[in-house]
Amino acid sequence: MYEPKLILDEKPKFSWQKIPDATSYSVYLIQLSSPHDVKVIWQQEDISSLEIEYPGEPQLELGIVYLLYIKSNLECPCHWRLRPQCCPVIQVIGRVDAN
Image (cartoon, rainbow, N blue to C red; front, side, top):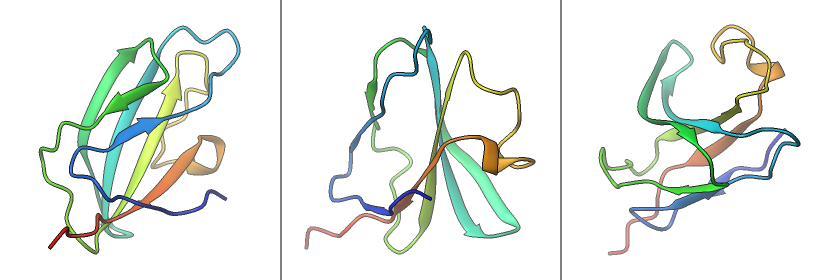
């Protein structure tokens, strides 16, 4: 189980640890409004670095739970909706309003 992270920035940087022999990663930010209302709101594929900055659009909503799903080119071919237990997922809790 991963620890929830509180987002304080409108354009947070997401980073992860290198997986041995991986050459690229795909990153998906998933909004969880309810267990049955799940949607990918942002994704980037074929990333060679170990971090990426979220562009700020769509804006992260206060109080909404998001999952940050990072998949390497070597990981299992499962789909996070079907078998989330075999893929690394970080829970991200809505950003804090600066006002």
